[in-house]
Image (tube, rainbow, N blue to C red; front, side, top):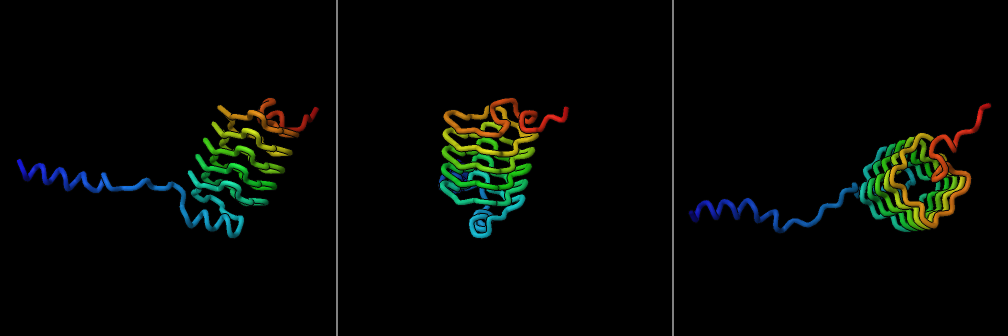
Length: 151
């Protein structure tokens, strides 16, 4: 009986003392902040609050659940990026490329979104409360709204 209890405790003890693991790759965060380039990086859950990501190359990056509150993403390329559940509250998103990106459940509350390319992006459950949206197909028809009429 004591042996079983000791074996069980020895297996469970490490689980009791583990701390939460961050999902993002810290080297990828450092790379992005120092070079502005992080293609195919794992930045899921990263805290990029207030980050200056002007012209950042984030093609195919995983930013699922990332905190981009107040970030500046002018001219950023997020083509094919996974932004599911990311927080862009009060972010500046001008001339950004979200082509074919996953914007499901993204929070754009109070964000400024001007001239962004969202062609082919998935936008289920998007929160655009109090957002300033200009010349961008968000909230007014999705991908077709951002494409020119060829008639």
